[in-house]
Length: 353
Image (cartoon, rainbow, N blue to C red; front, side, top):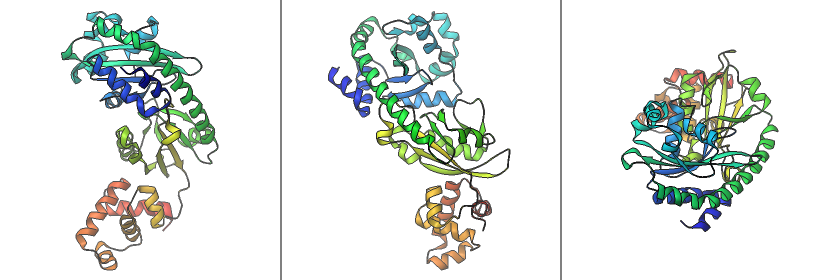
């Protein structure tokens, strides 16, 4: 393991997957990950399938991690394995292993906790496939030799991330509309007062990730949040969700936090903004911005909203009916509607046309 790479990762977030991949390879792991375990649980960095497995656990409603609980209770200054944390009979009956890890081919682990004063607690963990057997003493000794370097790097990264997150929080509190910061898995990390007030009829309480009561809109939100981290920028979307208290439609905008705002271990991966003005004029450009439509798709959507048929739009735009029907299907998919009548009604609600 290149020790210099560990310290590079402390200030260059893109280096963490390389560090973790190297650790996983040296210990026979499928992947390694750094998780924040306080104040909220989320993946800071991971190699291999680490992000995907964590997101899968969120989708499965696995909001309790017995490993983290045992690590927190033991307060051991080194790496521990499953056999240090549990009796063999406990692992067989523990839902984390029985219902989640074993069915997916995993089940052997080594991990340690690192506490960063005034910021939070972090776990560095290596996950091994069950068929490869437990992580042995030689690998634990190797990990413990790396631990002082990893501890310093995590502390630097977490402190830098906390400072950036604090600045981001200041910015988002100044927004003149309801907004929340979400983790990669869709948990609310922070929300301004307007969001709390305006979103009561939109979201389901007590869920692992932010969940819309409008099931069709929630399916679109879930797909965006589940996008691989490398293509998170493509997850930006706008969608319409119905408020189940007022019955009014609202526009929600999911915006990835990227670049300097997303450096190191800052938990915010997305900004979710709520637009409560339901009578904004929807020009083709506005439709493009709201629903990620292409110029041609926005033109078709606007034409349908104005009462033109597909045949009439075909003549008007000089396109074939087949091309127009394909564009209509894409518009329906992006707006979360199933029929042209629903699309027209949706645009009408927001434009007063």
